[in-house]
Image (cartoon, rainbow, N blue to C red; front, side, top):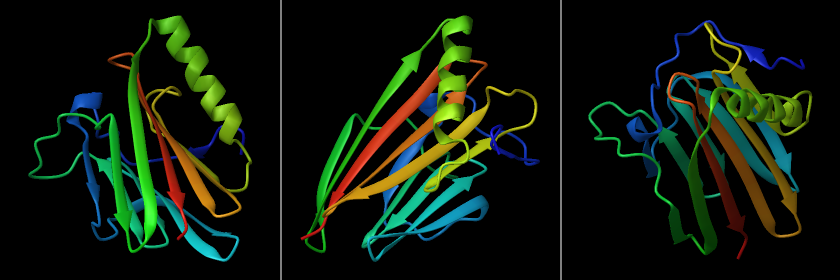
Length: 166
């Protein structure tokens, strides 16, 4: 599984600024799903045709191209308290030259390959068109990271979420 999950669905995202962020949306149709039990907490990593969803405890996080939503790209930081859980989402958009972009995508694919708690989807048309997710737990804190790559724009969206139990 070193190459990741080879997807057959078309690559829908074109640039980071087409993404929208939302909490609390219902599950959307997924191309691939990984279900985990992180210390008794069910976590679901969902790779969508338009990016990702993560469900963990009381939180449902979506970063995707959403029909009818304006996009605008991921927010830099979002903090909330959800049913007593402390939630913090952070995102950054990197713009890279071709060689650096390819090296960074290869590192993401290597980091998530065959790892329990990770999911990496490779879209048709380019080995650098990737959406990857990885989650783990340390004591009362669940964290997950995601990577969304846009080869045509040389952009990588990296997110990191921290969810702390009450």
